[in-house]
Amino acid sequence: MNRIHAASLLLLALLISCQPTNKKLVDVDGNQYEVIQLDGVEWMAENLKVTHDREGNEIQYFIPDGDSTNIVTYGLLYDFENACKVCPEGWRLPTNEEWETLFNFSGDTNASNYKDTNFWKEAQNTNSTQFSARPTGIGNNQEHPNNFGENTLFWSSSIEDEHFIWTYILEKGKNNVRKASQHPTYAFSVRCVKASD
Image 1 (cartoon, rainbow, N blue to C red):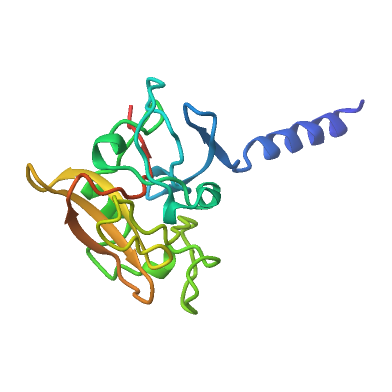
Image 2 (tube, one colour; image 1 turned 90 degrees about the vertical axis):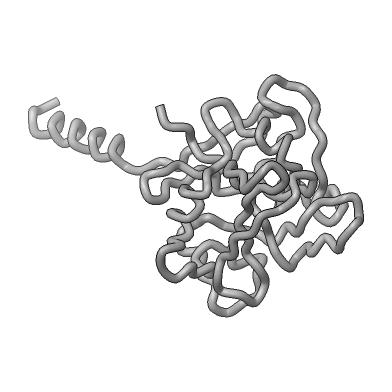
C-alpha cells in the first residue's frame, strides 16, 4: 500500500469518526429513546414509557387515553411523585430554567418548533428542534376529561409551593407554550435531561 493511499484511508477514517451520531438512551426496562442536544443540554426526544423506578420497583402510571396501543407512540403519564423517580440513571427532570431556555420564554415561545408534525394537524408546525412533542393529554382518575389529542403537559422539577408543581403546556391550535402550576396527583408526560457532571 503506497503512502498516498494509506493517508487517504486515514483521512477517510477520521472524517467518519467526526460525523454526528444519533445517541440512544436506555431506561431500566430496556426501552430506547432518541436524544437531542439543544442549547448545550441533552434532552430526551421522546416521552418516557418506563414502568419501574431507577431501583427496579414497580410504579403507578397512566396510559394515554386509556389505550395500551398508545404507549409506544405517546409514552406513559406519571404523577409528580413517580415522575421524580423514573428518569434513567444520570438523567433527571428539567428545572423551570431549563424548560424556559428550551422554549425561549424571554422571547416568542413558538410552539410549532417543538410539535411533532405527524400528530398536530396544524399547518404552521415545523418541529424544527426535533423535540417532537405529541398531544398525550393528561392522566387522572377520570375526574376531568383527559384531553388526549388536544394538549400535552410536561413536568418540571421546580415546585411552586407545597401544593403545586410547575408544568409546561403545548396545546392544539395555539402557537405559544404555556406555564402553569398543577396538583402533583395529576399525571403528565416526562422528558428527562442529562444531569451535569
